[in-house]
Length: 292
Image 1 (cartoon, rainbow, N blue to C red):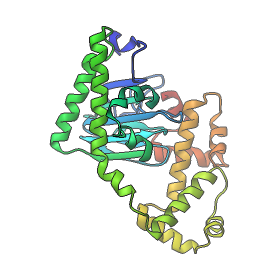
Image 2: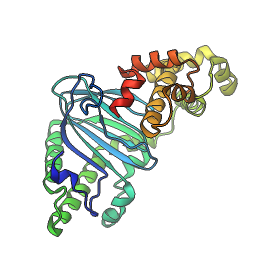
Image 3: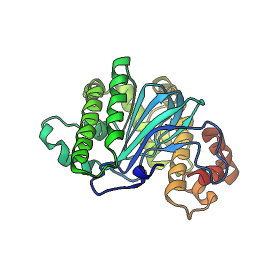
Image 4: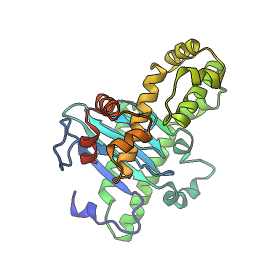
């Protein structure tokens, strides 16, 4: 990290700014800083932006995980994201910010709700077209040029560049925001109810019989419907949600033992927790703790 990047002045509008970071796909050695880039907050209310300039990476958020290719934009609000290289050409930019710090800059643009994507979409990803990719690169170059400079003119241009970036992102999200206004189908309502139940009870020893009693539908119908609409099984979703919650606990609470982390997210056997964590994350819980 450069001297300029380390100097955090009071006007800085991002709590984290990592420009064109080259990620290493190899597991990091103990104490090394290579490997995943953590670009999203664990605290409620925070927002994050991740953009992939080149290569391919994997991301994991508290509610979902997936793959991002070059030119992909990922937004998150109030969750926890880690981004890991999937090949040796992976270059990403990550931003973390508190929306309350940006609200004063956005007042002149009312009634446009510039932060609407972060307020309503929670997690959103989109591959950008060639023209939009070029514009995104230019926006980040402007931010990098003025970030950390302390003269008033540079501060003003940094703020203007940040607002321009958020306006660009808001424009990219309009189609998805309009889709959300459509009423959900009956099938979508059932899947949402299943997800809500899982996310409120993931720390318990859940069974399909409990889900059946709660939603009053056949467990076989729910299993088929969930796979049809999400592409994964109910227990696959539960397992990944538990592991992502474990990653949050490991990150924010250094005092908890790995066994206690596993227990708090619903794994009653430490060996079961470690095996599932390694299968999903690619690292043991202990290795992951050393990296974060």
